[in-house]
Image (cartoon, rainbow, N blue to C red):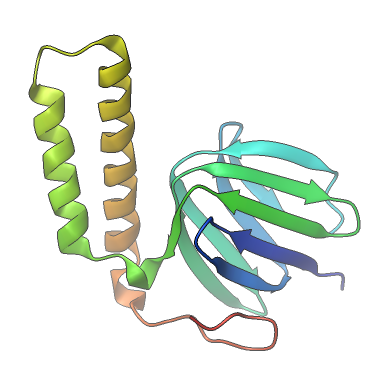
Length: 151
């Protein structure tokens, strides 16, 4: 069966570089699931959970946004603004970021631009905390194998 050659890159590092059976990611179009031989596509990512599946194993990654490009010949690249494996998320830090964002939202005197920035920060904090809590039972690093970058 055909595989997807997948790369997940942020400005700081490459999180994943491996062959996959499927990939699910959050986009402005909705949740996208990519299988081998998908048509070429470029889409904007939104904050959420990316799930990379290979041989019955799953890697869970929180992404803040960015782009996904599906190229011909099963090449897929995600250029994320920021991303972290689920096991890298510090739940206490995520809760503190959520508390700060909620406090900032409560302040009434804001321009439209400031309000949008605070709302985006609140959304990212909520999603990050959700991913951390959802995957709390799988806090270990993903099983590494051929083609997976070890951190």
